[in-house]
Length: 188
Image (cartoon, rainbow, N blue to C red):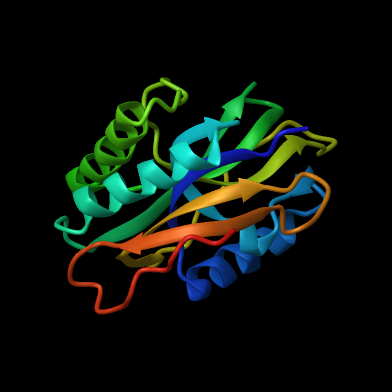
């Protein structure tokens, strides 16, 4: 089977650890918790694509987003997709700053410009943390603790490896301006 790809905002390790700590008490409520290393915020889901097209998209994305500033992103609350009483996806919402939507538009535009088909659903920024409700009672909304925020600075291309965990492998990344770090080259 051909690998699938997506572009995402990378979460810092300390935020991933805080999310994992918050999810510890919920492992019996869901059939699958997302692996701590797999937490991310999807900007454009690609699916299957030619590596040459992905490399072209990475060049365009780097050119377009290096001028955008790194920005503060706050994690604000939990949310769900699916039935309210037994959700299929459990996720974390952000404060949705305008620059996040600008970054997402630039990533999506670069994909389209290089001929890559992406999922065209409206952008709903979130971090998936668990799948498939397994609790014996109906789901009741959970409260996210205060103080989860970070500087969003890195955009990456991930490849999905379905048979392993963590299942997302970073293939490339670049940084927003003002992050003070170096971008990563393409990994074969």
